[in-house]
Image (cartoon, rainbow, N blue to C red; front, side, top):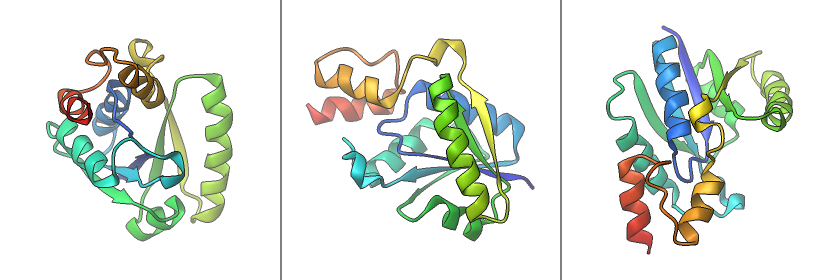
Length: 157
């Protein structure tokens, strides 16, 4: 069994994230979506809310599980005997940052590799940051996020 982890803040989960999760679920026997607490990013949603939104958005994927974490990712990887870390990339700027993280995570684990999946063209411009900005300025984000996220955002108004 090949178990991979897809870590992120997911504040909130977008269709871009969901695309990476669905594509990973086709490639690997088990995908763990690891929702990071990331308090320094001052998330709009609490960790428990983000975990629940990811669970609801991924409910159709039998080989995907979701967990929250506040530890160092490398510690989680080591504890769960993860095969690889999945990272989505939209731009070359993402690549430079993700490459640094990949080297760091390989050094902090027993050589666990990071696998980069490029975003599909349809979602290459969507990020959680952009979704939050649109939402906070009263815009419609329904084309960028799953229905559970739309409902949760509406409840924040």
